[in-house]
Image (tube, rainbow, N blue to C red; front, side, top):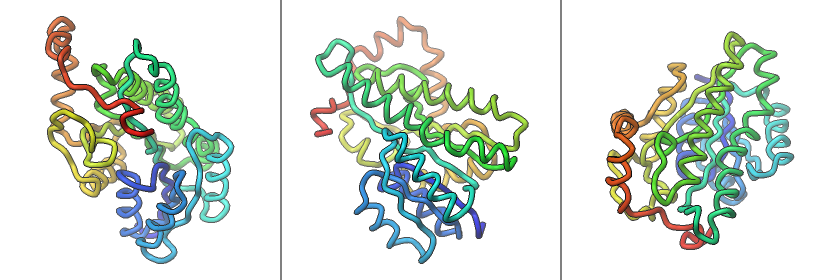
Length: 259
């Protein structure tokens, strides 16, 4: 798809970097957005010449993300695909001292960060009658996981936010895609102290994500096996769910992760 333009947040590593590699390899111009300039520049140097533009911005900074969006449009034109991928994960227990601050941090990045990323493109895409807006949620948003209340809630909020946006843009020519990854082998999952079934490498996950985006699907769990797991958990009666997961291992806290 030569000539395609793609804007990706959280592009410095993990899923975001894998998506950038995938799109650039097939001829797209990719806007790389993240906080760490050195990692973005290193990634850009790995991509085919002229296929990447670097935009250093934090998704918690509304002005910076808006400026990155404006700079990309001014240089390359309106993107065909915008992927709100930036996200963070850490254990957050409501009753613990850092429960509030961790929840605020997770929601600011994972939920408001998605809104900040997509907002600058909604009006111009609607006016153009084209474009695809993609949000990366998680299967963790389907049911609350012990020790990960803020993370699970943030991803549930992303799912609902994107659903609302999809309905609002119905008939405009602008598509909204909700992606729910299972476990992907990234720095985010590296320190999880529990079994992670159906784990995907980032490049394989990116390949599957792009296939969903290209197909114009509204909502997809990747890999598909995790969709079955998620549905079974949703159907499990509360009493059984509570007993089954009460003793489950928990995500490391923000402090344990050094974040």
